[in-house]
Length: 200
Image 1: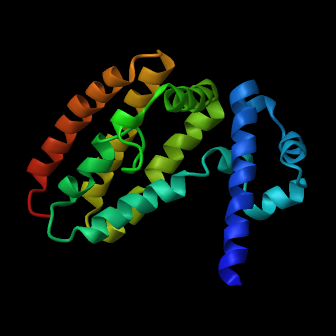
Image 2 (image 1 turned 90 degrees about the horizontal axis):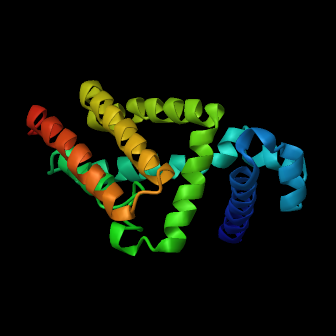
C-alpha cells in the first residue's frame, strides 16, 4: 500500500513539474505564475507548495536525482579513482546519467533539451539558481570522497560542462558538435583532475 501511495505521489509531482516546465518554455519563466501552473495542472497552489518549495524548484525538479546519480557512482566504484568513476556520466551523454547517451539524441530529444536550456538561459533567475545548485553539490561530494578540494574542482568542471551544453543548444549547434566540445574540453579537465588525484 505504501509503495502505491509513493508511486502516486511521484507521478503527481512529475505531472506538476512537467506542466510548469512546458509553460516556462512557452512563455518564459518570469511570465508564468504559480496560479497559472496550478490551473493548467488541475491542482491548487497549496498542492504545489506541498511538493515544491518554490517556482524555481518546479523547473529544476530533476537536479536532486542528478546529484544522487553522481554520489551513487562514487559510492559504487570504491576501487576506481573518483575522476574516472564520474567520467562516463559527464562525457557519455547530454545529461548526468547513462540513460540518454549521445547516439540516442534524436530530433525530438534535441528540441526538448534546446527548449529547456533556452528557457533557463533567457531567465536571470534560473541562471542564478543553476549556479547555486551546482555550487551546493560540493558539500555532498566532499562528504562521499572526503576531499573538499577534489569536489570543488569537479563542481567547477560541472559548471563548465553545463555552459558548453547550453551554449551549443542555444546556438542550435548539431548534437555531434556539442558532444565533441564536451568530450574534448571536459575530458581534458577530467584528465588534469585525475593527474592531480590519481589514487583517490
